[in-house]
Length: 197
Length: 426
Image 1 (cartoon, each protein chain N blue to C red):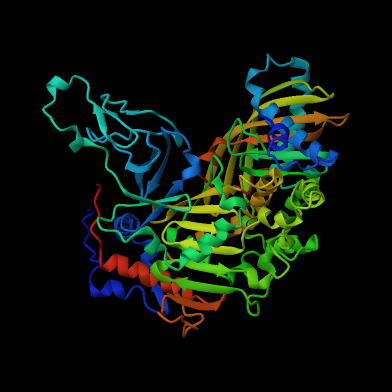
Image 2: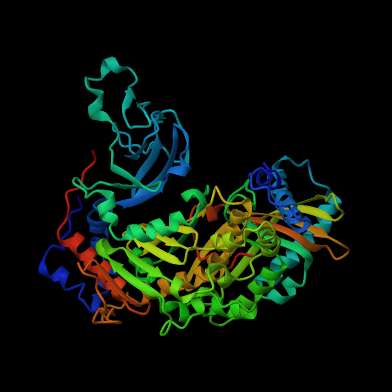
């Protein structure tokens, strides 16, 4: 089911301006990308090799706390989405977060605010990226799927969360247009997950 | 029943919860925690789930009640049951998924089969089994009642009627439900589950705490200022006309509406994709409905396990004396324009990402501080003597900086702990 279809049948007769339709289409695009991931054919070896340094660089930036540099690697129409499970749809299911560019920037500001107690002192993280696969994206660029293990150490305790991430990387610099991070622990009980990006 | 060397019914338990201070032990003693699971959680009405989660016959959802695995089920005649999720043969937990649809529950261990109303339907090879009356082997049942579609259950052998137990809290409850078009509110599919290393009462101490917003949530208020938004938490708690109320049975209300005359939506930050949805509603003449996209600004806490915060239901699940799981459910407005729920999804994430982490950090810091045996007491005296009290003493009103709600729920807690009700499965 798509949100665009669902909300046009809600009987309110509301006009659907183009900007709103674009948001709903983006939500559907995210839901479809997530739902179809397991059915993809074997990845393209050349594209997978091309994607690897981009994904590893992102992991290194995040582990190093270089959030401003990380923020610079997103497109203007970027979306970072952390659903609570998969499959899911950003217009019908609760998520941990779905950030546009504005909230991504706020997130980086929040991480820098010394009164953001949930991340001060900050989590020390180690990301292990593996099983990198890539395919050509319909609009140019790449779609990748990779597994991710994040080990977090904070307040003398550590937790390790594993899952997978989907990236849509576009343009000559392979900027992030879409990132979906699926961490099954979010649906079973996790301590302060504010280190996840 | 747990056997303990510590006797909470003795006079010295009353010394742990005093009018102006509370002993650390009620947050750190595993024996007290074990007793709470029966004397508080089994003996009180507890929120289990919402009827909208199990619309069809056979639908069920699994949760816990004072750590007991329970099932909320819809049976063929449409009624809702809350059952102990335990086979009456060997004790196997029957349903291990969070929810689903099952015409019958078949125990995977030896094949005993139960109906959604808990009745034992079949035992394999019955000739070998001496039981003649299957009704003696039904699943354990809890007393179950609903208010406005919200399902509560209890193991109390003689519970007061749910509506009486809610008492004055019904006003706030009705306010939260009635603002939805058609009075129609539903609960979305899966919750977010957050855990903290701390006692479950820490989330309770926080629920009606109007002072912490200024300090613990400073970073959230700073984010709001950067986009010219005065968040609801940014009000000066010392001068705001917001009101906190301590109600009978430990229930609490923080009514923020008097402090935000411009309405809830104006206090909401610029969440992702807000503008297109907002414009669509305004253009269609539904600007007034935008307030539905954020919370009612009436925070209602129903002791011991349900908090209404924003458009979320926050269900407190005790795991261990120093471990708590929070279920965060998002409510929807089925009869409102679709934009409302689309906005709610993004609004919901805002505080969960930029406010809740700070609360979780405070809970864990407090639990760590309470581990110091030489420092025994927690101060709970702010706002004493308690302010205005209504005629029959059932409601204490105060400024949101008052700790009257905390004192009141802890007094009720002490009553439950020292005069235990009989609990049993039906």
